[in-house]
Image (tube, rainbow, N blue to C red; front, side, top):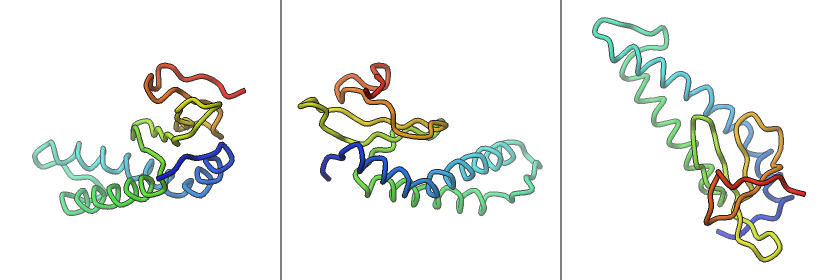
Length: 120
């Protein structure tokens, strides 16, 4: 996969919004179903083991859909999506974190999230 320009990354993020929103919902369902299954006799209104397996399968599909765009899903709780890019000759990730409305941050590929800087 190639590199993203900032405009391309923002466009891809917009296209991925429904996928990301579904991941957030399924992530919560997975936690609830797993918690109920961990306690003998406990039931979730969401179902049991078959429903948990279905949620897990759907999450895997959605995560694959993100990866197929060339973006990299770096975290699920919270969601963290990095878009490989070149910023003035420097290999970076344009970085989006769940709760942010746009891509306004980047970090060098070799330094990771802790080195996030605001785009100018």
